[in-house]
Amino acid sequence: MMSPTKTALIAVSLLCTFTATTALAQTPVWTNQRSINQISEHVYRFGATQNAMFIVTPAGIVLVDGSCDNMQWLKGELKQRFNLPVKYAVMSHDHQSHICDMDVFADTAVGIAHVNMLPHVLREKRKTIIPQVLFEDRMEIELGGIKVALIHLGPTHSDNMIYVHVPADGVMFAPDFGRGRNILPDFRDLDIHNALKALGTLERWPDVRIVLEGHDKFTQTQQQAFGEFRRYLQAVRDRVLERIVAGKSLSEIRKEVTMADFKEFNQSPERVLVHVDTTFDYLWRYREPTIGGPQVPVRAPRD
Ligand SMILES: [Zn+2]
Image 1 (cartoon, rainbow, N blue to C red):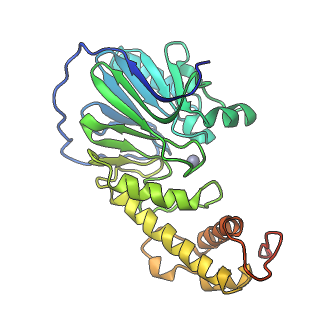
Image 2: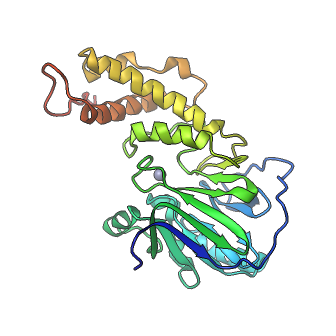
Image 3: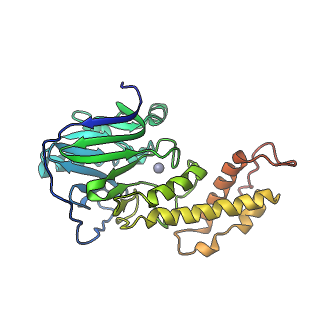
């Protein structure tokens, strides 16, 4: 096991040249059938109900994330279409469905992940490749002349989430984070304050033309996807915090914070309740009341 490094560089091949990226003329759209969809010159999305991706270079393939029960199929497809080995298996974050069955590629690939990921993989017995290369803030892979930047912006969606940027193609892969108006079901595994900061950073990240999320059936063609999520998250956070400070109970806050003015976002009233509950939970840990205040988290009755 390599020890964690602040910045690691893997330079595999500088010899191959590549042509400038030309964006595909149309935004590809896919269904729940498992498929491979090219989204830029070197980058392909694959999966069924979720999105993962791979980057094809003259010296091999960089795989990013997995897909349950689809990896043997993918292996056959990669062999048939490109006849190139998968050299690196990069994991976006530890959640099982996003890294499923990546061990299928352990015969040729080195697993790479954020350093915080390993304890989750081992503790939860994730069905995936064990990451052999771990990094903290940034890491850059260079394979066949293509650079792939792995970016950690602190704890956001999990404590080990990374964003995968292919600058030459202008692609940013941000599963569960570049979601636009399709907000996460809950904020349980989300560092809300740092997520707000990271969403702002990603919205301004240079060389991004296409944002690939983990669940949408198309690519977000603008970084606005990060801004939309930030707008909603900021509003929930501010509304819940304001009411906690005013001494309101969670039951009262649940009735008042309905997010009715965010109707165009993909929300159900039940999902908004979970957003309020998980935000309340987060803010309960964040602040210390001046007078009184519950010493244990107060949750609304589940009836
Ligand atoms: Zn996730």
